[in-house]
Amino acid sequence: MDKLKAGLEVHQQLDTGKLFCRCKSILRNDEPMIVLKRRMSLVAGETEDIDEAAKHEVAKGLEYVYEAYDTNCLVELDEEPPHEIDSEALKISIQVCLLLNCSIFPVTQVMRKIVVDGSNTSGFQRTVLIGHDGFIETSGGRVGIETVALEEDSARKIRSEGGKVVYRLDRLGIPLVEITTKPDLKSPEQIKEAALKIGEILRSCQVRRGIGTIRQDLNISVSGGKRVEIKGFQDPRTMIRVVQNEVMRQKECIRKGVCKSEVRRALPDGITEFLRPMPGASRMYPETDLPLLKIPKKIIDLAKKTLPKLMSEHKAYLREFGLNDELIRLVLKDKKLEEFKTLTKVMDNYSLIAKSLTIFPRELSRKTGKSMEETERALNVHVLERVLEEVGRNISPNDVKNVLEKILRGQSVEKSLEKSDVNFKEEIRKILKEKPGLSKGAYMGLLMSKFRGVVSGKEISDELDKHLLK
Image (cartoon, rainbow, N blue to C red; front, side, top):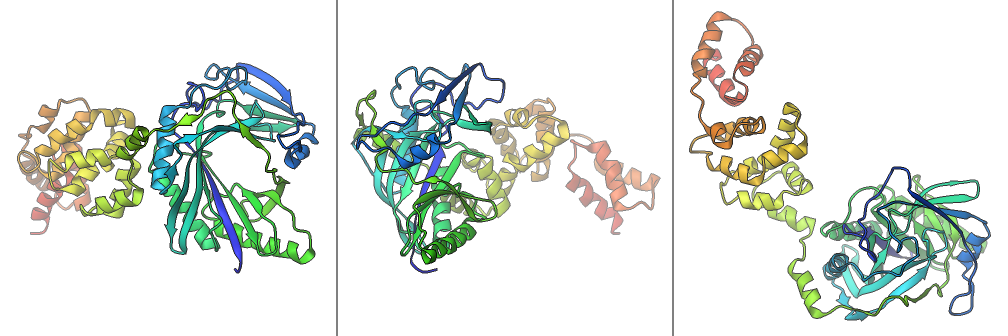
């Protein structure tokens, strides 16, 4: 695939409060408490030109309806000036810049960026540049990071019906980092690799997870054609196919002499469809309600001190303890890395530590009918630390799960750690004598029902083998 040139734009929500007010970032599904309506009007920009994308949208004659709640405020309704930028969101955006090897702007200006789809009550989005001139490494070479910006998310589109578009203001104002690469991407494979690398960096930071929290756009062109922006380019399963199909489409447009600079949308089947004309260059102007944003060295130093490690670094760390891939995945997925580090100071059975943090709580939650929240509260790191201290002294590794079950069922930690005086070996001999000729599975069922939570299944199984294999 020759003479392909592309760059990525990645937008990731941060897990903080709203960017320019102190409202919480909560999505709502109940009935709205406030509804307001607006229409779009054409206004010339600072260059006295009217944006082509704005003309295209205004021609549709749409009415925009905005739904709001008591978790929204006058800033989101565009009835009050923006407040100072959220300090936690600023710190996270600086950390993203550092992980992308960017330089930080010491002084920067909040800007207004015109939006043309009605997704903001003010008609513009606030955005501020934080970093510039970074890079990531890929197998196809270094990819430059042009800028990292911090901006507010748009309102959430609920539905379109009969010339009316309904938005919900719960999402409006949630902080986003916008990462823009340079047009250094030269192949579908490199584009996908870069997208996944940037995604890994973002997930190491304090970002929101789930559907809709990350959105990626691709700017792409082939030699002799015009740049096209593809929205909705975030499914790794279709990235390569979307690029291949778009290159073929652009080459056909060049052959026919009908190339257009436009915005398109990626579809699940790997093709793209027209969305609107490409916005003009004059849609940015300064935010007059906020002062210049100064980023002193002490804020950057604080961000460096708390700089998170990448997932690949965490995986490499856990592999040093001999954990298999599944246990590594569970420890990281359940965010138990710090607890794991704490418990490695207690014992050196690292697999048992990982299971006690991840697998055992899941199994015991299902078995006892307790929620995972209740289970993790009862089996917190301090409880696990006390239980694991007794392994090799008072209990065996096979006893741990049984002890944890007793604790979850309401027994005290110390009582749960007491060795039972039940003579299960004598009981095994008794059952074998009373019910001769059963399978091992049948004997296990009888004995486990009698000694569940007192004696481990392995101990029963091992003792049965001594008798059955004679």
